[in-house]
Image (tube, protein in one colour):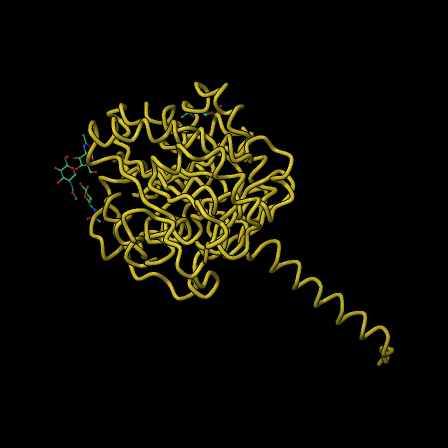
Length: 362
Ligand SMILES: *[C@@H]1O[C@H](CO)[C@@H](O)[C@H](O)[C@H]1NC(C)=O
Ligand SMILES: *[C@@H]1O[C@H](CO)[C@@H](O)[C@H](O)[C@H]1NC(C)=O
Ligand SMILES: *[C@@H]1O[C@H](CO)[C@@H](O)[C@H](O)[C@H]1NC(C)=O
Ligand SMILES: *[C@@H]1O[C@H](CO)[C@@H](O)[C@H](O)[C@H]1NC(C)=O
């Protein structure tokens, strides 16, 4: 009998282990893990089982989903809300789909194409959205809030999860489709309300411009962008306000506004109101969500980096320099009047403890 040397035995064991590893990883797992659409179909049907038969609401089965949109500004603080809109049962969110247009002026100049793209996305068609995907893949925030990307990228890898056909297939399984638009005026977006086929519901999220600017000031990316200036923000807020009366009149069931300050002070009640308005069922707000975002915060998207912040709604009152507050108020008088935010007149006697920035709540 030939005695095998210890080295040979060891080598044989290593080769054996490696072969088993290769077999499992490259042959067995791909067979066991279903394709992303199949997997997601089971997940959605399981998580929405308490909602009954939803086949009338999913594109995959020839239904029409319930479609909603949150219109806001960078730094307006939609994080907690978006987390719910992205992760409640049956919800699919096109997070910041106009990310590829970068600034408001660019999105405005190309609004025809941008609006067409939004309509396509509401129908789970990604044929116009190659640029969005290119931008989105580079952003961890985008991935966290977009559709089922976080899960699918983890289980199936980047190439599969950002494939437009896969994304379309997954999107079509969902009965509730939302999106958040940060960089386009309401007056342009409003034309989407006219489209009978979408039957869209729009909420405008409004925040005190002093708070918005304060939250932008801690972001380097915002220092050199015209989009980020108070003047631009407030002229857009004035434009939005002019639309509000028209739209609440024409579409009382499908257009409304919410304040960031309410979302911050009463997150659970306000989120419930938002879901009711959109016509979406709200399960329990997940404790997981609340641990990650204990109060409320905002999301910023930029080409360079993405960050999440938790920022109290009224921090600007105690933290912002008087000169900076004054500079915002100087160009935002009309916007603040229209939206019911009180100016600080007398900085000498101003106290963050007693000042009530929202009119009608004194
Ligand atoms: C759901 O309803 C549709 C008709 O609206 C029907 O074809 C389908 O079989 C139902 N699905 C289930 C699981 O009951
Ligand atoms: C789906 O819609 C059809 C026609 O609109 C209706 O007859 C059917 O009852 C609906 N199914 C469910 C499960 O709501
Ligand atoms: C999107 O493009 C693909 C390939 O070009 C095509 O097969 C598909 O029908 C298009 N989808 C829609 C909804 O137009
Ligand atoms: C539009 O959506 C509302 C709920 O938001 C629903 O009650 C209504 O039936 C829908 N209309 C059409 C034409 O689908």
